Image (cartoon, rainbow, N blue to C red; front, side, top):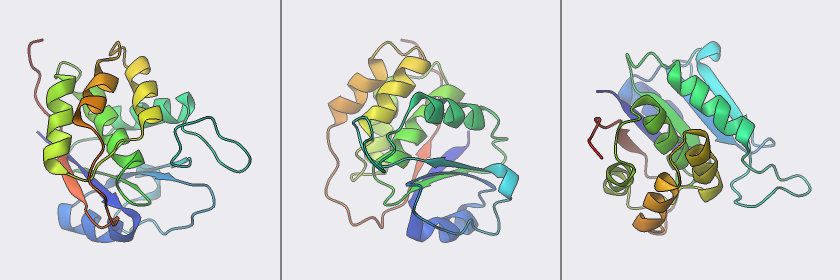
Length: 176
């Protein structure tokens, strides 16, 4: 089964090349400019402009919303899985781990939310998934609060410097 590579912005080119990623999801604030790695074709790149906040946006801040999460799910479902999917945000700690969990659940819906959250924690002691993204994804995917509860159960990650990419395996279907 394939995997999702989660990285901070500073390491996307390196991670794309190292893991052979051909598709990428970027969760970045609208004003943050960056260059898509050359190995990722423009039509296989999804840019979701949002800030890393858990409340409704005010002023110039854009809160993650249902439209963002639906686009994330749609893009993930069309990922060819012939190579890892690269998901990144500014530090690779909050928005991108949340997106990785949602992508993994939409691709392997019969897996346990608890097992998935534990795989995330094993892969990254630093990940602290954005709870707004998690709650929206939980609702859209019909997880009935189980994903939200599983992420809360693993708790906040350790303090991070934004330089710790990781790989999240998709998982296998499991009986509930």
